Length: 239
Picture 1: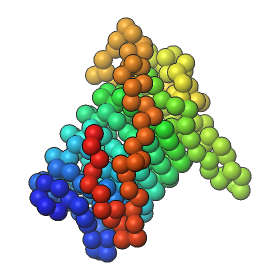
Picture 2: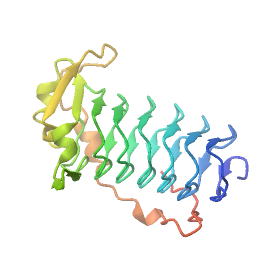
Picture 3: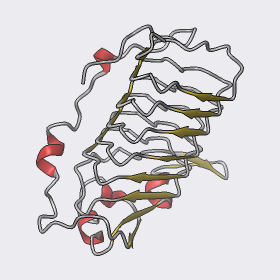
Picture 4: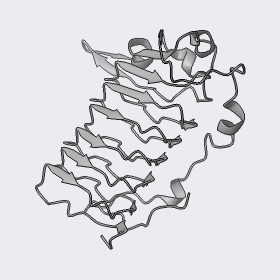
């Protein structure tokens, strides 16, 4: 680390819990990728985005404490990790493509009111999901494949496992909008929860225009896949 930026983390360091220094304001692509020892990570409160492949293939990682100022989670950030439950901060706006793909141990996820974009395949392969809560009165635009996944059950591969088995919780009185919205309507189980802090608008599609400008914006050209030592060597992309 150079103080404000963290560009490397020793992949062979046998530490189970890591507390990031509060001086860190950004991390490089792939900085923790392929680490097999880390189980708990507490990130700096000054981070506003997580770079590509940040925790990709961290197979022991179960718990991550995200900072409240985080606004963006980039491509492959937590893919193939072992996280079980994660609290998305109240200022988060964008979850990029395949950010959580194949996190098979992830059981619960809750999206804050601030969320604007959940991009393609962001949670594909997360077949352990039981509960998905969206704290938005109006459904944001998503594609059909956000929660795609197949799971082997009693020797048979079951398609659309998350859509058929997880429960989608939405604010009271808003299920009719989610049941008619592309992507969200894929869920077989949509239930309402009392969320008194959620702002209700008269326009059920107020988020569409802003969301459409971002949805599907692929940033793969700014991401470098992790190499064998777990460090892609790229500085974070420009947002």
